[in-house]
Length: 368
Ligand SMILES: Cc1cc2nc3c(=O)[nH]c(=O)nc-3n(C[C@H](O)[C@H](O)[C@H](O)COP(=O)(O)OP(=O)(O)OC[C@H]3O[C@@H](n4cnc5c(N)ncnc54)[C@H](O)[C@@H]3O)c2cc1C
Image 1: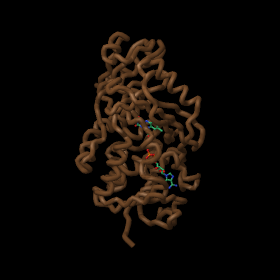
Image 2: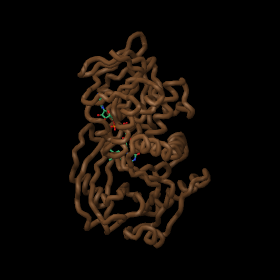
Image 3: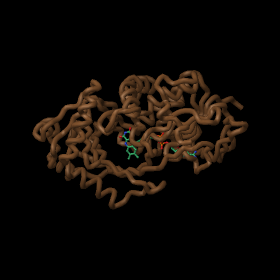
Image 4: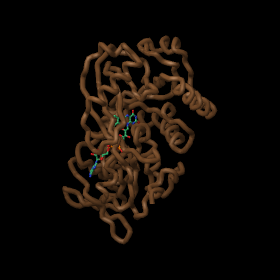
């Protein structure tokens, strides 16, 4: 039997990004995925890479998001070169629409401290919003434009990452459901799955919303699934020039082929991925408040996904009290953005025993 150095549990964007990074560093890596690679939250996402717009205060999450934003272009370049695929990465900014006075005040405060940190935020009057984004005709207070935010087609990115994993020698085991982690004398030895036992000295939990492994994971991983519903319509190309988010919690992002992704909800309803009348109505009415241009767009498809939510809204990254056992989950609304930095830091931790950014605020051991 061939030896495995690292077992990655879960084949979403976090597990695959880490597997690819470790594979490139000469590790023999296997990914164990219950269904199909990337088929859960990582394909359900909108692919908006927001490192400023929805981070309301300075702190470790903001710093991690900034590191991720800086790293993204290099990561995309690497993946596109490796796979000869184009993953729809565009730095065309995010426009945030403040609908009420209090939304404007809180975003003003956010813009102030972010500008002090050397980042750009432009405040646009309703007239300026219309000039830059003619399809926005809702009753808005003002707009805040974040020019360095980007978007990526996360579904295509997952395909590229799958190819890159294989090229890096990673073995992808689909339809392989992990049942429990095997621990002996305080050290992780392997995992028991419905396809038999897999052994390795290093095991990383990248199970997203399923991180607690039905409460059998040897250490606490308190993630909860936060359902997000998503509706896709087809509209004229470049109907929207930027990804647009409103203070009511809705967003629109348009792919280059004209598809408009309208999102989303944040619902704590367990592991059900149903779409509901209420959820769809909420999305549509909020998007309609921003723009009447969407009314003639035609329906294409819909889906929902489960974001791995943590109580303190920080991801869970690092080693556990069990030797050889690591966790990288809990990325909630930022997993597409945070994938490359997570992979980079976790690979450093696993290979060198230390990450170049202090992972203490994200430590799995903060829940003990
Ligand atoms: C509607 C929506 C919109 C979003 N929009 C954005 C966005 O615009 N930008 C952004 O950055 N993020 C966004 N996110 C968040 C992002 O999608 C997640 O943070 C990210 O995908 C998490 O990746 P993951 O690999 O941890 O989880 P997942 O992609 O869920 O992967 C976990 C994997 O583990 C597998 N698994 C579970 N149990 C087992 C088991 N027992 N054995 C083996 N495998 C198992 C699952 O099948 C799954 O494939 C959005 C999410 C949703 C739902």
